[in-house]
Image (tube, rainbow, N blue to C red; front, side, top):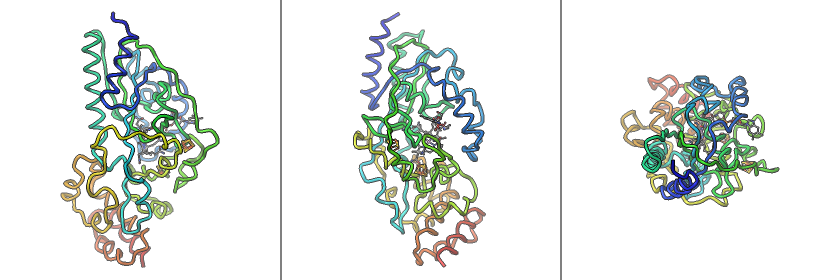
Length: 347
Ligand code: B12
Ligand code: SF4
Ligand code: SF4
């Protein structure tokens, strides 16, 4: 067996060469607090319609159960720091706000390719006896908790991973392996008395620091939630039509944010402040063509136009009433409901 300490040093260097901003190692069983917290989250119903979170709870709660032969988990952070001010578009009445992570190419594809290359490198170096599996939001893995255990950063009060070296604009990926690689120290919490993310949230989605009620989160409401959104919450969406960045943008540790690792995360044409009227007019074919390769495509035209209509209703712009009026008889009942709501708000 090769020297695993030396292999780890070269593996981390290889991960950095691939573009990951940080790479650190923990054991799969280093997250003993997760099972009780995940069960509490589910028992409170905070997952809303994300019924898939109730499946394979034993795996999601405990990575050691997910793959019992695994001995080490390499946790990786990939920066997608925006070049433009992420909040500049929020409040531009006739424009749509699309969250930073969805302005470029789908991160699942980009991160997964990098993880696979890294896994192939590891097998080539360690020999066939080593087994490896890679994940990026593709399996029931508690990525943030593992990231903290490995020392990538800590789970901030907004529940996302934050680092003193790269802020919070980063995706997380993992490489599980049967190799017994030396581990790194967990990262302690550095939130202190700060509450910036909690107060920045437009929908008061945090019942307590470090806990998110997804049912109130704009990211959940615009991406995951099917059917009509609770009328009480619709005005709070503002012009956010896909995801939300308010809590992330508020974090003071972003002064240490590093440049995005891949140019393909940069905003593509038509994703920074596109006109609401233009988006409301998209039919299914146009929607698919416009958002090909983007994570936005996943929600489909109907949910997307529903979100655009809530933003139109929140715009206060009488001239957009006509746009909403034209969708009041849309074949999709949720779109038609959103259009009627928007017309009523603008009347
Ligand atoms: C489901 C999900 C969502 C849901 C629910 C989010 C959530 N916070 O749970 C919704 C749709 C709302 C969502 C939104 C977003 N998401 Co998301 N999401 C996930 C997913 C698939 C699972 C997360 C999960 O298991 N949640 C369940 C709860 C129980 O887990 P948890 O938040 O970790 O809960 C912990 C805390 O509550 C904590 N806790 C409870 N009490 C206490 C007390 C103390 C003192 C402490 C310290 C902790 C603590 O313990 C719990 C268990 O660890 C992960 C990918 C993955 N496989 O992990 C991506 C992931 C978390 N999402 C991500 C992103 C980028 C986002 C958005 C920023 C996208 C956007 N711009 O709109 C927003 C952020 C919203 C927010 N404030 O969290 C990234 C986060 C990267 C990072 N730096 O952390 C991930 C990791 C995907 C990835 N691979 O990069 N997401
Ligand atoms: S993503 Fe937006 S709505 Fe969700 S918790 Fe953060 S600030 Fe609140
Ligand atoms: S904004 Fe403040 S409280 Fe929230 S995660 Fe960042 S440091 Fe922690």
